[in-house]
Every structure is written in structure tokens, then in C-alpha cells.
Length: 244
Ligand code: PGA
Picture 1 (cartoon, rainbow, N blue to C red):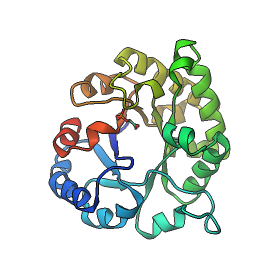
Picture 2 (cartoon, protein in one colour):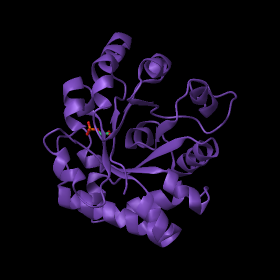
Picture 3 (cartoon, helix red, strand yellow):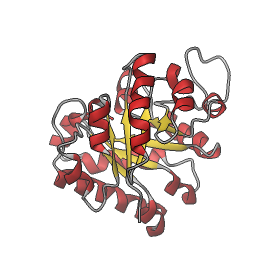
Picture 4 (spheres, helix red, strand yellow):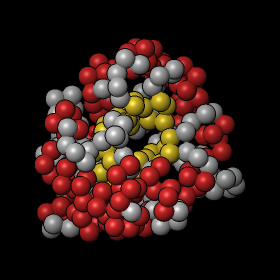
């Protein structure tokens, strides 16, 4: 049985007080759910958020693949480990689009995270035109095979995969549960064909893109959708708790 894993991705939102108030409000209640819950808070609040949170996982939104060095503005995996962060979102479409994170960069991040015993939340997904041209599976397959190419087969089950169609992110357009399930099933097939059926059976696959309290139940009741990566609807504590 795979766990249900629901992560919020706050992106570049909230100040320190709002971050800590949110954790205060949700943390105890998170313990009462059967869901593995986490929130991706901005880098500068990670340390305090991590210290305050007892039940909700505090996760990072990115990292650099080098251990240290002349990379102005970047955060290393060692720095994240130093403040007890164990999960990192990587390859989000906004990172790919606005900050030029390439598939090769993302592959290095996956490898370094796994080498350091951290969990990558690896995002993949197609643009609207790729969706309309029926290229979804080819695009996602290329991303995943390249992004997972540097790690040992057996470690693939340690990666959480988040399928996020770009046309559904922040647009209010959710992929229907049927579309999301079909792609997540294909992703599991891709993992099975390339890394083995046992690993495919264990790997957690989240769906992301305009997930809200009113559509999450149908999405995560699909056999190949094990949770969600949620942007907008994770910013309000009541909405986040409803999602869980
Ligand atoms: P959204 O964002 O829920 O606001 O569409 C999802 C994401 O970017 O992870």
C-alpha cells in the first residue's frame, strides 16, 4: 500500500509571521489525518518553520547540485541538511521556464539528493501546446528518463514524482481525474519498463495543477494518483486542512 502524500508548494509567498502562524494553526491537526503532509516554504523561513513544526513536514522548493562554491544566491543540499530538511521539490515547471533548469541539471539534483538521503519531489509535465498536440506521454517520458538517469535503479522508488501539466498550474483548469489518472498510469508504466515492476508499484506519484478542496477527493481516489502537489490552495490553513 502506498502512502497518500500531500505537499503544499508556497512558491514566493508569505512573510515570516504568516509562515509561523500557519504552522501553529495546522500542525496539531495534521497529526490527526492519515496523510503524509508537507509544505514547501521559502528558503529564508525553512529553519524556523522546521523548528516549529512537529507533524507537518517542512520541505524546500529547490537546491543546487554542487556541495559548495561560487554560486551566488544558491542553496546547497548540505545547508538544507544542516537545518534538518529532508525533502526537496525539484524541476518545477516554473524553475524550468523562468530559471532555465535543464533536464541535465535536474538529473544532477536528483542524484545528489539521493546520495545525501534526501527525498526529491521530481516535477514533470507538458505545456498546453504539447497537450493539444498529444505529446504529453512523450514529453513526460523524456523528462523522467533523463532526470532519473544518474541514479541506481533501486533508488528510483525513493523519488516522489509529481505530474503537473503546465496548462493546469495556477490557471484554475484542473486536468480531469480521468486525464490525470491516464498520465499517472503511463508514468507508472514508464517506471516499470525502465526500472522494474516492483519499483513502479512502490513509487509515489502525485498530481498537481489547480488541486482544490473540492476536486482532490476524486483525483486521489484514482488508482495511480497517490497524492497531490498543491500551490494556491495550500496557502490558506483551512483550505490546506480540508485538502488533507
Ligand atoms: P496550483 O500550483 O495548485 O496553484 O495550480 C501547483 C504547483 O505549481 O505545484
